[in-house]
Amino acid sequence: MIFDTHAHYDDEAFDPDREGLLKSLHNQGIDYIVNVGASIDSIKKTLALAKEYPFIYAAVGVHPSDSQMLSEKHMKWIKDMASCDKVAAIGEIGLDYYWKDPDKEVQKKWFARQLQIAGEVKLPVIVHSRDAAKDTLDLLKEQRKELTQVVIHCYSYGKEMAAEFLNLDFYFGIGGVLTFKNARKLIEAAEYIPMNRILLETDCPYLAPEPYRGKRNQSSYIDFVAQKLSEIKQISKEEVLAQTMQNAKEFYGKERF
Ligand SMILES: [Zn+2]
Image: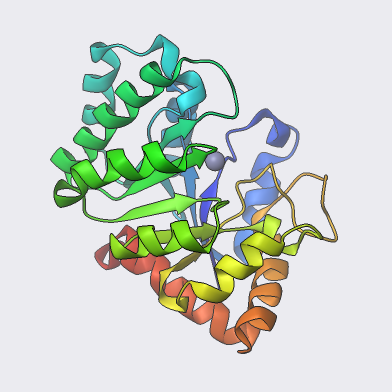
């Protein structure tokens, strides 16, 4: 019983064995996967995966690192794609100041613009935010009234920022990083965030949990994240999986599942 709320099975890392792997994952109890677009090309591949596999859903949006090339034509296309069957969210969109390019103003412009689309089509938003806490918070606050649900995916800030995001009724995406040796700040945040606000995710092929750190990630490894979270929250792993399954369904829209 696992819902992987954020995956990139369109990535070339899965080219050698994608079909066999996805089928075996579904047989091993991976009930649902949301495959997340990050560029125009990956959105196309994501839509194709969602069409082919009944248990895969799609998110459409362009990642800040790819926002330099965007135009209003792309915005119209993303909005059109958002109405496709099985498109469950707009994302991943956001701000990434870890990289110098694209310029902050360019990133902010297309983050705000894609948030606007999410408001118009009434879909939840998957936010990527790295080294950009304050601007992320400001832009999301500005449009909060129009937005349905928001998740800060691969949450990497501390407890204080978590409090700010909780005030806005957001969700928090947590994955393999929780199992890393240097995860003290994230563990502290995970202790603080209520169970009903946590979504489990892989971000695969990236960020595999221990004991697979550095290897190609896949949805079944969420089990190690659930195990770690159960120790932090002092509840059973089964409770973690059941609660986060319910959270994911509520986030993406109960009527779909
Ligand atoms: Zn991602």
